[in-house]
Image (cartoon, rainbow, N blue to C red; front, top):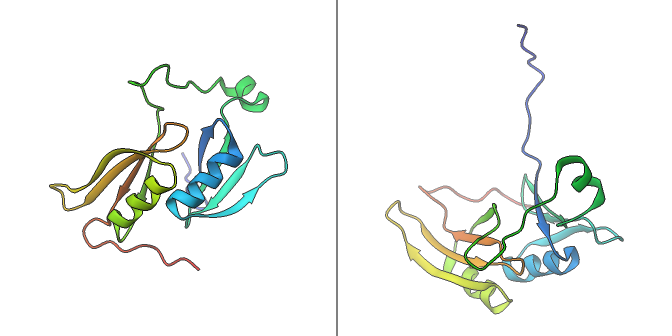
Length: 146
């Protein structure tokens, strides 16, 4: 079996399925401090600048993907959650958590020091998705953004 040395994939997108793309991308910009890179005119696709990997938003149900790969399953009650968790790293987790809650995020757990040396807090976004807000681990520093 021959190996192809030209294959070197980059993780390009995480796609978050939401009820209202425009509202969700605006929420993420206000609550978590991201810049909106793109919101298309149809409001069926949006992207946030988030470093090397793009965070993209698209409707929960859309003909193109439902017919090809199946429908997105959403939680049926308050004890279930979507099969996705979004994690953001901040130098000041307490300030980031406060900003998120002040901009509509639902508090789940206030930031606290964890045994592995990270400060972590949890909120839910406007679609019920859990967002982890944590400090950098083991001295890791954020990637330089332009």
